[in-house]
Image 1 (cartoon, helix red, strand yellow):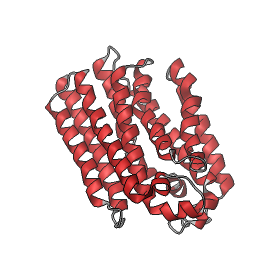
Image 2 (cartoon, helix red, strand yellow):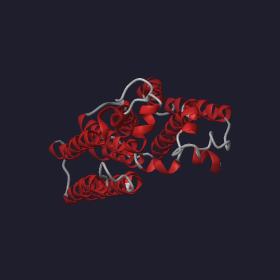
Image 3 (spheres, one colour):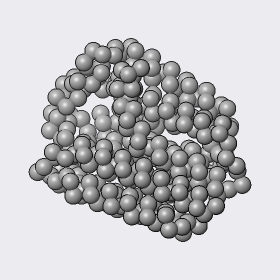
Image 4 (cartoon, helix red, strand yellow):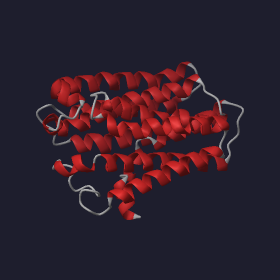
Length: 284
């Protein structure tokens, strides 16, 4: 089990999971639908199964690339801790469990489940043909808030889409920062990424633009949903973390990329979600 947690980098669940809680409790507190433990558990299971399948497939598909990259050669498959066949089997099992779980939620979630898997699995191949691979990753994680909203309501709405757009821009932006580490390697292997395409300086500029839009999208819900002071505090914390990670990373100094990637983004998502949930509780 420890090996599979390592394979899927389970700690990175901290990025999308808080926004899934936002989508779920947005639906519970702004519609006529009531809180149900069964739906919450199934939402969490879908998040885990979808992410497990996406990460395991990424490690499976990139195993030869990872073996060549000094930064990634110690990952589980190149290092021999997990076989490619085991990783692929784990992927397929989690895909099946994801679809199976959606069957018990509502028809819309079930019908959309193959589309969701296509997005989250498809990301792994995109670096081979497009520098927009970071945006595909952002799209995959952006399904969390709207997907969780659909678990409760079985219908689309505008406000959760703002949260999805915020996640899309946020994740795309910080993945560009993370990819700065592999700029030279990507060029040598003819892999596509924003840093390999635009260079470090312009890649950071694009990341900044994306994070500005992410900040805008976390503000937009206040125009459509009644919120309290705690939500505004959450916005301030989230935006501050966006600014802080750009202060940490410079084109000529990538020594703090991991701090910007894991710590600041983890704080941004968890604290923002916490203030959102406290605000919804306060408003009730």
